[in-house]
Length: 450
Image (cartoon, rainbow, N blue to C red):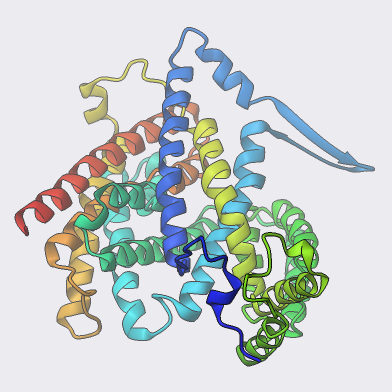
């Protein structure tokens, strides 16, 4: 027996079903979290430059230790955030990369070439600009700082513009920012590892092999992957490779297939929906009034759980926590740059600050736009629907907002406090200018196109 949807809805209400696409949910979370990111950054700057500014450094340098028998880990609060909590950020980034590679904007060669080309251009040119300004100096190791794009800030600005920009531009910016993150993770793993402990590295490989075998045999337990992820984090932390890489590695092995295929899901849900037999005046306001209906709803819920992939379920569950808690917390702990002694002459004299500012403000837009132009002109890819070259330029300028990942790489690049502070100031300055310039370009373009 087939039951129409209308019979299952009380007559006095009108329900308009809405299909929530994964990208729309992702875009909304990232855009909304940019507000919290700005607030956290402002609080950190004000705190660090207030009369009680010393408490900012002292608080985040407070040691927190965890011991189990002879095993002990002692890190500062800032290190716990950068080394441990940020693993969740990298884990979600890994899930997003895997989803995009399987079914998204990186799933086919032609679709992937445009954002990947843009990401390559946006990484190579800024790194070259920074390195050329710092060649032969101890600060040359910071070349990775201007390579990254902060997807939350960039999408937040596009969210402000709303329908003034084509939907294809949001997809393009998200895709090249994700490809950019992939490149940044590789840079961290390959170039910002100081010393390797072989025994811990071998243990990491062994744990990763166990995770890979479990994924191959369709183990879908999130508890299993959580426990193995914690073990991998400890092993990677001890190996000398930056521990956040563990988050990316685990994400790549999260199964992307559900227990049920679509046909079985539809068959089961159809059967349970047929159990709903209501009188002409309706079934009542509460499902508790009918035990058979309640059992059917619970069975449909189980079927939904089985058809949903672990990758999809974990990304949906963790992304809001990362967007609204992890990243703002990272900004609060790392964004407190001291403005004492800041002047135009210091800005010009500092190769670190100038390298970062020119890399993000000039290298990013030029590199992204030029490599995108090459991909299109050679016929390897094409521009998204309704997206013009002015839009690409505006998005490329927004790519100069490096904030989260750039701050992260800055903490890995320099050990000296003053160099880290210079890097932070350069990142904040370039990100602010890139955001203002990018939104101005896209707003003027949308105004002139009317």
